[in-house]
Image (cartoon, rainbow, N blue to C red; front, side):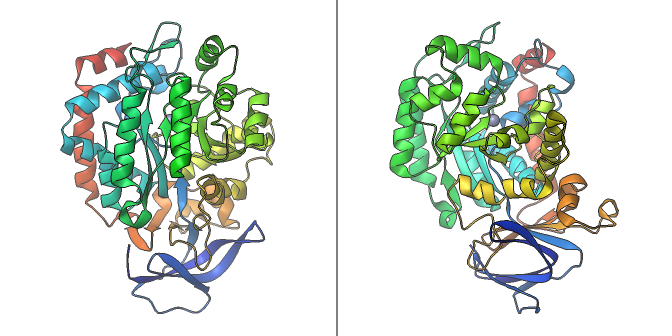
Length: 459
Ligand SMILES: [Zn+2]
């Protein structure tokens, strides 16, 4: 938390009027301490003044589904079909086992290095907030988030088995039952971190997925989350194999029906992906008020469409996350727009204002935080500033369309969380980018050097 005041000039400032987006011209956003104090046309007095033309000031962008660690393990190993058998998901064949091994062989400082590199990428991707599911053997994610200033919902996984394995047909089998151990580990992390850094660090309950979590564990997770008032996040309907597995195990239920049966489908649930959901599953999610975490790029990578517009057509609250890959929220919005228009054959779905709303207002609502996701006096001072003066963003008629269609992470100028500038001029202020990048890459290389990594990626 900062005691300082900051004044930021926006040639454009994204606000809302009666629930609709409204872009103000030539306004100053004044923050004092951790709050937005005023929106003015007069230049205010402040300790720090950012007075550059051609910027748009946005509510801090919220990235509610990301994995700094496990996707780093797969990066540039899994594109173009590499590392995949029959074009199937790599979650159980590559990401989970190699992350588990990686955690075991890396030192605490190396795990910190991976965590710092991920958070650096998130901040440079424009995010002020992240919800980050990760294996509970990487508590360093919390340390790195505290150190680097990002708003953080840490979501340490719970599994019914620590060693989920997929057989040749894609069915996930359990090697043991240690859900109780994961719940105890989660409780310990909650006791240590919930509310740390003046409330900037929070936890989410994070049962990994429908096919790695048995009914008893899911019921226990829901009960504990609601006792503590933390959001619940999980992976849901990620693949046709998951749908088949849950149907076989649980009397023909779909994954969404399975969660509904156990009482998890509710406004406090954020469910990642849902690409194999049926239309009636999506209607059920809408009726229960659950949120879909839409991550279009990781699926596009494997030839699968994860269409924001499809979820919205069923009236499900839908937000956009980066799933640890290409942690560029502007780029992810662009992918959401493209894929939505292709899947519907319509140009007028997934519009720029709608997508910006998804990563601000809708995301804030999904975590029950109406102090976030908006620029208005009294709101928490989380802001993302984009420089619209780059040649590829000129000439400029509509700044929101420019953000969704032409801009990318290289245009992020400033990121502020709780009134503290973490990034300015596109450069990290709270650490040495080059050192963080080199150390993170070196740590991941240690995992890639493992014989099982070479075998997995050769397969
Ligand atoms: Zn995920």
